[in-house]
Length: 200
Ligand SMILES: Cc1cc2nc3c(=O)[nH]c(=O)nc-3n(C[C@H](O)[C@H](O)[C@H](O)COP(=O)(O)O)c2cc1C
Image (cartoon, rainbow, N blue to C red; front, side, top):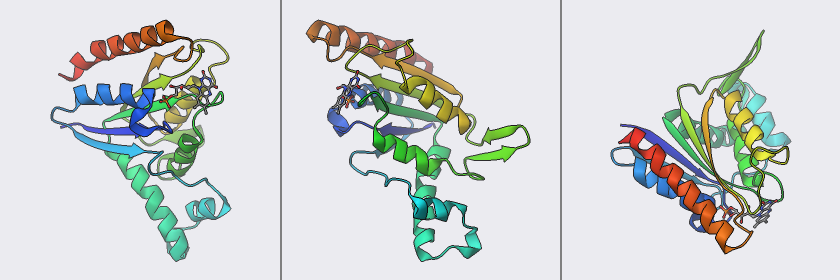
């Protein structure tokens, strides 16, 4: 039985186009799997600040009560990732980048000694053996151009944690008229149809 972690980053939660596509994909996957949904609009992750990062870098035996709470919350997010065989990310583009809620989430799951470790050869990700699907929804067109700031960043970040098997499914041109939007959504849905048989 596979465990699926769905992370929704749309400010519109289930009404976002990225979430809708992620939901459609997950509905096709779910048959006998366990689903964990982390909705970053409904339950926003706090910004990383000095206090929170200080908790991450304080040895377990020296943590005060507040630091223990901060660690427990970060551990909860990380445990969801650790449990997942398949990670599904709904990724809107907002103002030329990833949603700030997703950045805050990333900042809470990148923990030295927990999700990655430093070696003489550089950082090594510890969350291996997972497959990730990223549903990228955008008003304009960026895929394959230097203006696509999201795809390389998200790919690099996931790889840093050891998640290297990542597929992006794009719905672009959603704000470029009805024809463009319908075509983008059909293309993304057709890709979902192609992907699902692997999980049948
Ligand atoms: C605040 C905001 C900023 C946006 N900025 C961009 C942008 O920089 N580039 C772009 O192509 N689309 C932009 N869009 C359009 C979104 O990418 C598009 O609406 C997409 O569907 C968002 O994903 P969602 O529906 O899952 O929330 C923006 C939308 C909003 C609400």
